[in-house]
Image (cartoon, rainbow, N blue to C red):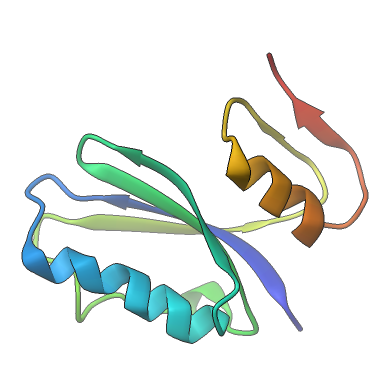
Length: 102
């Protein structure tokens, strides 16, 4: 079953290896992903995968102080100012209740 995920990476000390995060996401999503946000020491991606969250591993590209949260998204969500990621969400999630905060 194809699932939709949001992954949030907290990277207190950005390293060269972190550039490989996108390659892991490309592989597990078969290319169906979108950058959700980039901030100071944090990045987020939306992607689809048939894998369950505990089957997804970023251990090869994360350092000791790094953290990752992978959350499956469902019909109900709210977003604010995600730009292109908003369109990706609308096209990948069921047509349930969707919120947009201004």
